[in-house]
Amino acid sequence: MKRFWKDVAVEPHGDAWQVLLDSRAVKTQGRNPQLLPTRAMADLVAAEFAAQGEEIDLGAFVHRDMADYAIDIVAPDRATHITKLLAYAETDTLCYRADPDEPLFRRQETVWEPIVTACETAHGVKLERASGIVHRPQSETTTAALRRRLEAEDAFTLAALLTLTSLATSLVVGLAMLEGGADAEALFAASNLEEDWQAELWGRDHEAQAVRDMKLAEFRKAAEFADAARARS
Image (cartoon, rainbow, N blue to C red; front, side, top):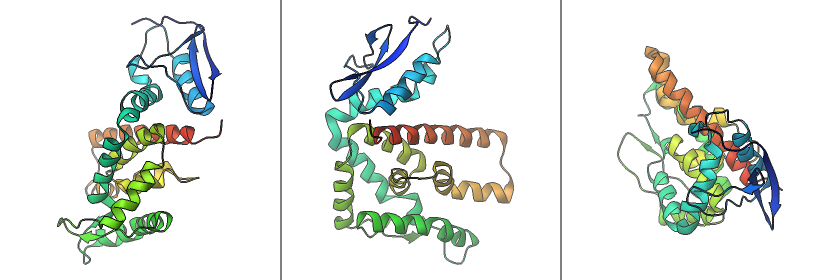
C-alpha cells in the first residue's frame, strides 16, 4: 500500500489529543475516533506516520496499534484484560526458582528477590515463592490487592502492561515498568535470566539471539507507550 498522506500533525480534542493526516483525524482500525490521553502519546503515534516512506510498512505502527488495541479492545472489556494480567501472577517467572542447592538459584535470588520485594512493598501484597515446578497459588488477599491496583489504570496503560507482562511472563516485571525511572533493559534481562544463564553456559545461537533482540525491542516500545500514557499533557 502506498502512502496516501503528506502532512502529519497533532492537535488537542477536548481533554484528549488526536493525530491528523492532511488535516483529517486518524481513526482506529475498529473505526473509532483515535483519541489519545496525552500529547506524549499522540507524538509517538504521529512520529510513526511521519516516518513512513512511499510504501507503507504496517509493522512500523507499533504505538498506533497499541493505541487502537486500548480503544477498540481493552476499553470495552477492562475486566477480562485485568483477569488476563492476574493470571500471570499465579505463575510469575520471578516467583518460581531453581532448587536452593543449584547455582542458578543464587543468581535468581540476587536478581529477582529485590524486584519481588519492591513489588510487595509498593502494592501491599505478599507473593508466594516456590522452588521447582510445583504450583503455589497466590493468596486471595494478594490477588484482590493486585486487582485493585490494575483497576486504577486506564485502558492505554493496561494495553502496554499486557505487552510488557506477556513478554516477561511476569506481572511483577510489568508493574515494575510502571514505576518512575524503571530500566527497561534491566527488567527485561531479569525476566530472561534463565535463558541468559543457559546461554552463558552453552552459548547462544544466532536464531535465539535474534528472537531475544526482537522481544527486547517490543518490550522497549511497550515501555515507551506506558510512559506516554502516564505523562502529563
